[in-house]
Each structure stands twice: as C-alpha cells, then as structure tokens.
Image (cartoon, helix red, strand yellow):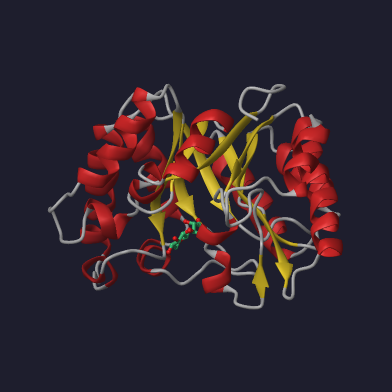
Length: 305
Ligand code: XIL
C-alpha cells in the first residue's frame, strides 16, 4: 500500500512488532509512515520527574531510520498514560515548567527526524467540553497554546497536530474542534494539522467523507491517524464484506480530499489490535486476520486506489 497515490499509508510500530516476523514483514513492505503505539507516551518516557527513559523509543526511531520509514510522534500531552507525579501537580507554574521540560526533551531528542507530532491528544469530552485533565484544570485552554509553542521551538520543521477521536459524524465534539482550531489560529498558535483518529464502528461510517471535509475547511492539513473499523461479535462473512466497503469508502474520502495527507491504520493483525481487550463486544477491526492473511478489507483499500 505504501506510496500508492498521493497518500502515505501508515501503521503503528513498537518494540513488540519490530521483533514479530509476521507483522514486521507486512510493516516493511506495505507502509511508509509509523506511529509508535506506546513507547513514546509520557509515562513510558518520563515515569519520574526528570528521569527520561529513551531506550524503547530510540529502538523505534532506529528501526524507522534503518528501514527508510517516517515517524509520526505520538503523543506529547494526553490525559491518559501520564504518570502519577504529573497528575499530582497542584500549581500553574510547576505544571507549565513540567510541560515545557517534557516537550523540549522529547521533541528535542528527535529533532528533524519526525514528520509530525500529535502535540495534544483527546482534549475533548464527547459533548464538546474540555476534559478535566490536570492540564486543563490548572492552565485552562491555554495549555494547548503552551504545548504547540514549545514543540514548535523544539523542532521548527515538524508538523504539529491536534489529534482526536469521534469526529466521524456530526455532533458537539467536531463542532468544538472546529471552534478551538479557529481560536488557535486567531492566537497565531503554530498548528499545522488535525488528526482524526477514525476508530470506527462498522455500520456507522457514512459521514466520514463529509466530516473530514469540515476539518479540512480550517485550511490545515488533515490525516486519518488511527484507523480501524470494529465489527460486532459474532463476526461473519457478511459483516466482513460490509467492512470491506467501509474501508474503501474511508480510503476514498482521504484520497479525494486535497489536504488529506495520509492514512495510518492502528495495527496489522486482528490478534494484536487494542479493540477486543478495550471493547469486548467488538472484534476483527484490521486488514489482516490473526494468521496475517489478507482479509477482504485489504481489497477494499486497494480498490479505492
Ligand atoms: C492504545 C494502544 O493501542 C494500547 O496498546 C494502549 O494500551 C493504550 O493506547 N487513542 C490513542 C492511542 O490515541 O494512543 C490509543 O492506543 C488508542 C486510542
């Protein structure tokens, strides 16, 4: 899939998949852009204040470099996977310094080697209000400005993204995102892209092309950053045939939109997906089955190209 059409195709990679034969061959041949699944998240990199652990994240960076692959850095400021010591911070000045230090150290380490950073991830609740993370509670909306400005200074060449899920249909969340981006733009915050995670439920994908267009109307580049289409158990051939059509529709939605730069899938094989353990009523969200055989969904993507 890599390098077909104007899009990049991406996938997740991490220290687990780099060593798994079935996954690594597919990653190398089919994809050109990689998002570290876990090892670049805050609690992995800075579990204790000032104690930075880059062993695993470096392995991912080296793997990408050796194989001529690009990286989307994921993620700098997120309410999940933050260590307890960050959650326990109670004053603005300390948190501001901690956010600056984290971003400077992480972005600085990979300066010039990262295509894009998911600078902030999942800042909204589904009703469009801000999540009451420690960042929002202490710093208000301006924690987003702080994160983007710091990242920009640490790596002026990287594209800086806001990343979010649940923007696949009309509703308060995508409205809130469009309003926020407009405020960020009016404050001259250095933001370059909107990442739509696109974790979809089969049967609820029809609005993706229209909503992606709305995101593009901001003038920013857009990317599908974490695509999977989960199927309700029990999975059968009919449901997988529908999933194929849906993969085709989503791929075409990005392809048809001039500012949509690429599609990252959140995994290779159904057996390694985060879905069954997180949403146990669902399964089979990806393009390869548990034996790394191509599903019909793979043809769906191919037929869109
Ligand atoms: C998930 C990973 O896939 C899991 O392995 C991990 O345990 C939790 O995080 N949105 C995101 C991703 O932005 O970082 C999440 O990844 C999936 C939802």
